[in-house]
Length: 407
Image 1: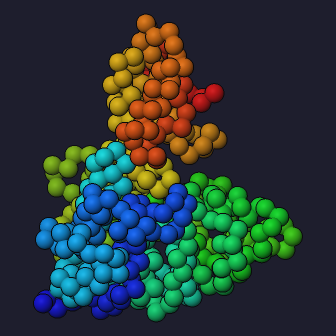
Image 2: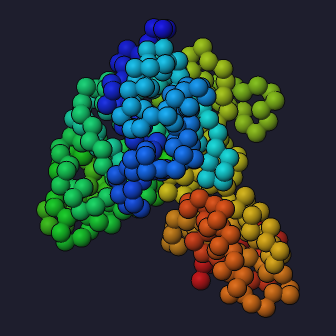
Image 3: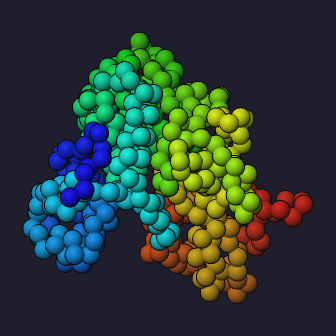
């Protein structure tokens, strides 16, 4: 076998957490349950699908998929990927984008790259005593903060559900680091206003990634609470990154720019990259364009602009409004459609404006058919929460696309 190059190798329990994280979307016992259905309770098709997901993440091949599919328990899967072909010869881990529109992309990271990122993060959070993980550890953000970081710092990690409950606050201890997404922080902030929630321990460190966190949420998390309660968080760091790169930049004050993490540097992109002058690269790596148009203040400081692919983030999931609109335009009774992200005062989901064909007389029936279409064809994050009908798409006086109220 090849020498395993990680200075801080993962343990068997880390592999168990990763396999469990991969399995939950496919084999969850109930909608809000954290329990997994036994492999024997799944159909052969679901077992093979899940085996493929596990094999893909750990860089295994088709023969390994078949071997996993023939096993009876998740524990056997963990042993196989930990001690078997993937073992000390592992050369990469493969992370997938959300694929909310059915087109996920895969991105492989070497152990050295993952360790380099985690070493950077460890230097940024040296005083945290424990990681409270609420993010899937098979996603790059969860893997970096909830698998690699605790290994390097030598601190424990506590796995909690991705949606907070009242007992979430009882599990917290001074010095906890909580890496999460904006939708989680919004839920925590709302719950902490309730009368039955206990005071928050001091020195809780928050991290938000996956999408821009609204300023009012960050301000609420850092504000002193009435009745002698501590602020929810002693500090809040925002991470800018992507599945293709991992963590790229950080800021600890929402009024400041992001700063490139030390293992990245700004570089000029080749001439053929017409959309962006600057990209980033690792030491001895090739220049890489970012998915957003960044506004650079200098070689280390930047602010993200609009995504080049016009994607938006919904509950930490990347979705493409134009692809959703194209799906709805495909209905024979839809003349035109526009889809965009709700304004902050409206919510955090997508909204759609539909222009029915002139012959449509039963608007309620068309509405039901569109809801059924989006439910059948789209992942939950990509389904418009509001659908409004009108005679023409909203436009400004200059003829440009305009926003609309959800009504």
